[in-house]
Image (cartoon, rainbow, N blue to C red):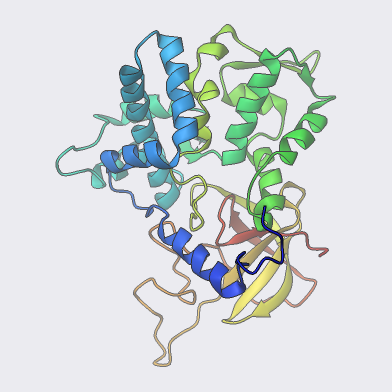
Amino acid sequence: MDAPNDPQVKVEGPAERQVRQREERMQLPKIEVKYVPEEWKVLYKEQHTEKFNASVEFLQTMMGINREEAEETLLDILTKTTFIEINLMVNGAQDAEKLFGNLLEAKNEELGIPFSSQQEVADFCDGMSLIFRKESNEYRNAGVQGRRLVQELKKRLRGGDSIDEDNIHQVLEEFCENIEVDERLKNFAQQEAGLDYPSLRDISKTIPEFNYDKTTGRLGLSPDADKSLMLNAPIFTDTIHSSHEKKLDRSRTISALAIYSKTTYPDCQRFFTDDEKIRGVEARIFWKRPRQDGNMPQNGNGPQNGNGPQNGNGPQNVNRPKTRNPPGKTAAMNCPRKTTSQIKARNPQN
């Protein structure tokens, strides 16, 4: 092993790190709603290899089919899932009718879309409750950590663990210790699962393979849990844009109070949330500002226009307070549940 002071060992400096990070960002798949299943299939095979292969193996065993058939079946489900997931991400929460209409607008001219009716879309989303949460007849994307938690609870229960209201906090602590994300996002990631599943009862109401005993406060599994693809295939915790640095999921919003911290260039105010659900999460708000000619920008680009991104990227998509708040005052606002460009997990005490 080379010694730390070996002149042949190159130490990455700030400039080199910026170049590397920029190159990594350029390799991220573009977030767009168009249906391109062949591109997605390649991404799943080449960039999500480990979890994809493990999921194929589970499907082989569960269905008693060969690898080629299992791979084809899984990719069909994954491309449908990705198609809907991206549409919700870009266009926000939608009911089945609106979602089907938006999917039609994003159709591939040669392939069309993989759904023939809004009922077919609804049935697919309902069958993938780990990925798509239904609230007031509208579908939303579930958070990555919520998906991971559900699969982890299934493994623990099948392993003989007892999970109830008395020990769930310890289970969550152990789960959070194994979350691997950028340090800036760790605080938020550790709280994300609770946004989708505030209690064990919520898990049983959302995921049909779970059941909850009100008398004992204990979480249990149905006999079908071992056959459930979404509970046993790890690829569903790592879909194409799960770790996308520029992802802004418009289907995932929550209301919270924010405390003003400071204003930075260019005309950006920073707030810390004051809410038990997402305590310590920071939001950045870019204010509307007219150009020198007095008109607001019309092209939807840049952080000052306040229109919010249309492609799922960028930091503009926040409902802004109408007036600026002095230090110590609170402002009601909506924050996306999962976005690396807009919400940073940071302890406000630091």
